[in-house]
Length: 258
Image (cartoon, rainbow, N blue to C red; front, top):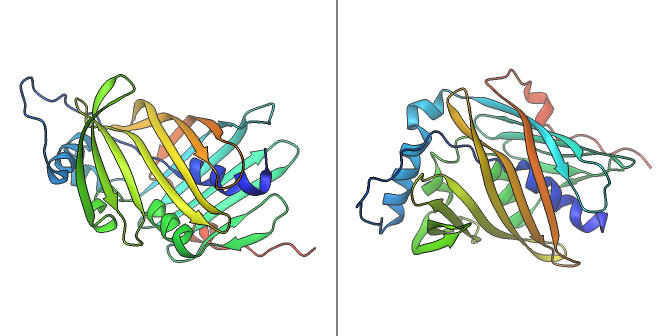
């Protein structure tokens, strides 16, 4: 595994968390939604509604991540806090700790050698979107250009597909299960210094935590701008809501002197 190429992609993966609440199946004979607004309304209903989502103001997730070339799972933690703060840490055996954070404005990465890089361009825009704690409630603000792309068979089930254009010009595809209305897949890409990297993220294993359904397994396929395809498997072992998190944890650290 090329550490320099794959490290930012790996950290992006484990920062992606999509939780959803218990969803009611679509009644038999219900017409297929034909607009993004209908699909998103079903999605928010499945999540539990605006008031329920707003009761949670922070989340801490711990888990393990299987990485190609690393013989044992890596331990990681993701801390998120409303309205737009996120910190991800990952311990890689024999290499050290990787960090990625966002304080709402500045977004950064720290690699194994403690060198810190501040994000710019599309990478910064993506990091800010991913740090939005109430992203589901602000979906149409973050993605003002929406188009319904019809039904597709995804993992053996029908899914309604929305193509979403972000403010920075990037385009993502969101796949919502046509019965549960949970988000089951997200396709996206980002342009960095080496070119365009593509991601396909699968969300599964939803379990209730404080009444909120959280996907406890995330499978990601990464197609880097340079290098071979990377497949990663993340499993969440602990999820806690409304945890006290000091804002200083999200601030950009100083790079270690050579």
